[in-house]
Amino acid sequence: MNKRILIIDDDQHMLCALEFLFTEEGYLVEAINAAAMVIPTVLKFQPEIILMDIRLGDGDGRLICDELKNSPITKHLPVILLTALSYREISEFDCLADAIIGKPYDIKYLLNTVSQLSDRTTDLLKY
Image (cartoon, rainbow, N blue to C red; front, side, top):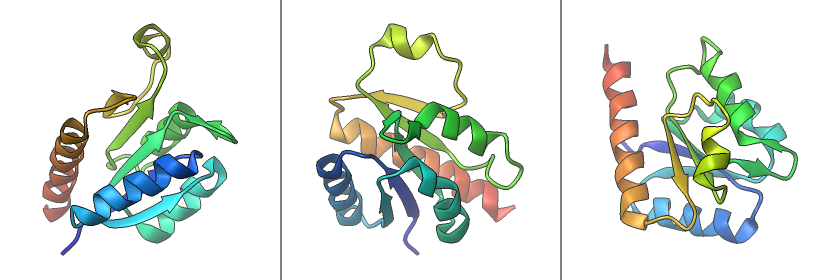
């Protein structure tokens, strides 16, 4: 069964590239471009992992991540944040993300991180 990944990015080119990459890797992908759509999409699509840009046109990915991690319904979902922010800017904000990956990112590293975290979620859901 294909693992479900939710990708959120307001940059349409980045969103399409990530959607293509993960579809080619065998994931079932839901791609959205607005922060306001994240929670309803998570509840409907029920992803095993979330990949989200920090800077969204209508919201902050770090705050959305914290909202997901503080909810009993979604706290188990791994969230990976993508960012063009510097390390200093990232470290100044306490965030509950499972991983933060800088842009430009290494594709193999991104795929490996997503795979490891989604495997962890799949294992948790078995019990």
